[in-house]
Length: 277
Image 1 (cartoon, rainbow, N blue to C red):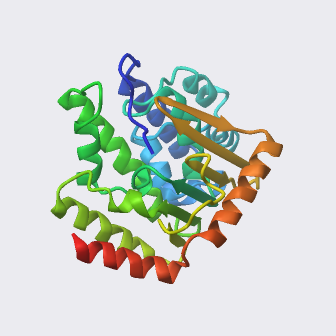
Image 2: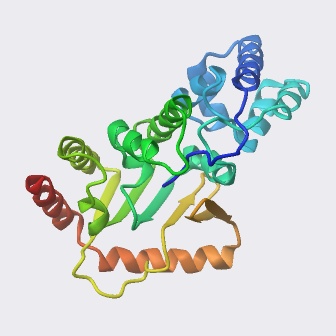
Image 3: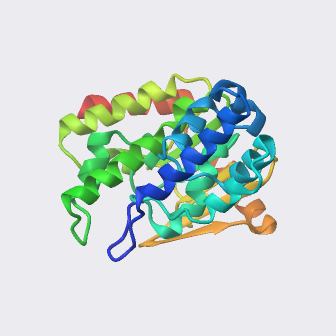
């Protein structure tokens, strides 16, 4: 998933995020709550609360509303949120989805181009950023890499979230980097496969027509059981909220899960790809 900032997009000044985090921290302490006590009251993990208070995460509207209510902040938290600008390292068209990802109780991803962003190792991601056209500055590469790694942290921070990935075989075989980096990347995917809340399936090259030929696709379900979808292309992305469209995409993903290799067969193929590097 290409969440990098395209040329000409405006970077965020991190001061606004840090200032918002300090506001939340002050009101949390005023209420006599630790991060561990506060987290379940607003429906977020402790690491997520810490990230927001440290100014490393852009809070969602749901978090702002819940924190305002729980902490009885006299409207101060909502007012501080109005001054937040977007994060460096994220394309403007990706922001809506980026806000939803950490809230997901179910997250499905189909990718036919590259290893999905949530599964990328830092070395693999760095190669993609370094080869980006137009070229990125060293600072922008580092900023994008930090955001990519932070996004992937939800695989650790959300152990109760159900993750499903379907990846085209050719995307795994494409050597976008040297053998060492590619071996590390496949090893990382194999490690992730061992987590009981994460399923990874490979769509084999031998499969002819399948339900995902329309392009990359992401689906997620929030704690309120609301479903959203996301699709992207060359420098564009679309957050899909129309229930009818989301339903159709859910049907396609469900069909893809039957058309891809099983989890066990996918692990075997991943090991085969790893051995050939």
